[in-house]
Image 1 (cartoon, rainbow, N blue to C red):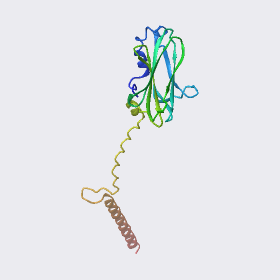
Image 2 (image 1 turned 45 degrees about the vertical axis):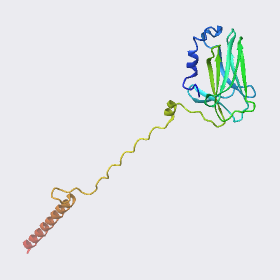
Image 3 (image 1 turned 120 degrees about the vertical axis):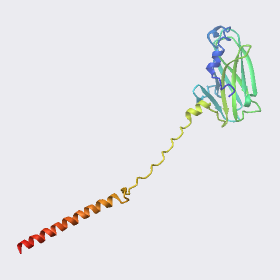
Length: 214
């Protein structure tokens, strides 16, 4: 959008001082609630893009655009509507003077050039100097709005954490003693030797007992 870099609230705030001469609008813009209407004259549904930013959508080939706004002033004030097409090309412009509170409308009749796929902007200007008072976005067909960099960062998935490297498998083999022999094997040899000595002791004891009896 041509004015996406500046929020609507900021734009209207910047106009505060310039709008002072407009009677009831001295404390703010006398125009508000710029909106698009459907064929039945009802406000079209707004589709949010991100916080503080939204848009309208119509099918490709739509023959006209109706924009409405509220005027709260009491002095004659010039208002102008402008429809901008792709790349900011002006498609329609109309001005009128309003001097009483109420709802006012502008109708852009595309005639023999129905709206094509793309992004459009409807701007509402105020005063002879044409201060931008409000703006709405319109997307035709399957054209899609682009999110700001900040919103893309907020909605982008976080980088997956790097998987830790698998630890080396624990060696189940018995550790070797300084002499190079296996600790487990040495224990078995010691136990076997002790058993043989015990068996020899028993044989000797039995032999001596037999000799004493004889």
